[in-house]
Image (cartoon, rainbow, N blue to C red; front, side, top):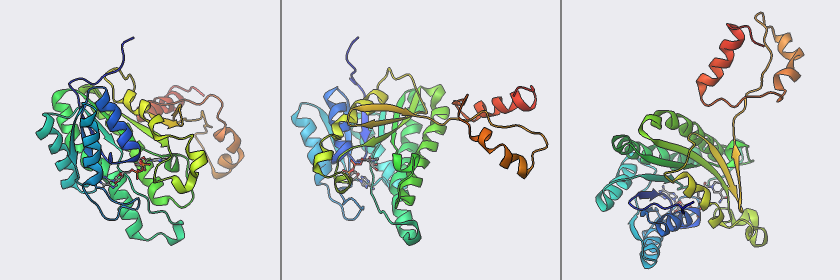
Length: 302
Ligand code: NAI
C-alpha cells in the first residue's frame, strides 16, 4: 500500500510550538500538508506568551522544505479561534485538517479548586476546541471534507487526583467529538479524539527523565496523522497513544436488569446483574441505546 500523504491539504495544529503539537505539525508537513503552527507561547499553566515557539516550529518546517504559517492567537477566545482559521485561509486558501492540541494545567485538589482555575482550563481545552472548530467546521462542511482530532486525556476518561478542571474539560472533548462525528457525517468530516501519554514539559515532573524516555512525544503522532488522513474509516472514536502502544477506548453499556415495576430494593438486589459486563454493547450513538431499550420495553427482548 502507498504511504500516507497530505499533498494539497491544509492543516491547523493548535499548541504546536512544542511538545506533542510540534511533533504533529512536523510530521503532517513532512508528508506534504501546509501547516498553520499555532501557539500562544505561554507557560505550562498558561501564563505569559510570545511568538517565539510558533515561529521556531514554522521555520523548522520551512528548513525541511515544507510550507508553514506561524500563528500566535489564543484558542481561548471566540475571536482567537476565528483568527486562527483565518490565518489558514489567508495563507493557504482552506482548512482540511484541524488538530485541537493546545493545553494548560492548573492542578489542585478539588476542595481547594477556585473558579479561576476552572475557567482558565475550560477556556483553553474545551471552549478552545469550540472556538477553533466552529469556524473550521463551517468551512469543512462547505467544501465537503474535513478531519478533526481532539486531544483528550486519560485524566478525564479514567480520572486522576487533582485534575477535576482538566478531567472535566478533557471528557467534555469526548462529548464534542461524538456529536461532531454525527453532524459531520454527510459532509465527509471525520472527528476523533486521542488520549496521549507523552514526556513533555507538561508531564516531566510526573515521569522523571528515565521513564520519560519510553514515552517520546513523537510516538503519539502516527495515530494523530492516521486520524488526519483521507483514508481513515472511523469517526466519533477515542484512541490511546503512549510510547508506541495504540489502543481504543470505548463506552460500553451492560445488558442490565429490567423490571417494569422497578423499586429501590430491586436496584439493590440486582446490583450485580446491572453492573455485570458480560454481553455489553458499544452503541454508535444515542440511538443505539434507544434501540436496545425499544427491544426490551416494546419488543420484549431481555
Ligand atoms: P505542552 O505544554 O508542551 O504543549 C501545549 C502547548 O499549548 C504549549 O506549547 C502552549 O504554549 C500551547 N497553548 C497553551 N495555551 C494556549 C492557547 N490559549 N492558545 C494557543 N496555544 C496554547 O504539553 P503537551 O504535553 O505537548 O500537551 C499537548 C496536549 O496534549 C494538551 O492538550 C495536553 O493536555 C494533552 N495531553 C498531554 C499528555 C501528556 O502525557 N503529555 C497526556 C494527556 C493529554
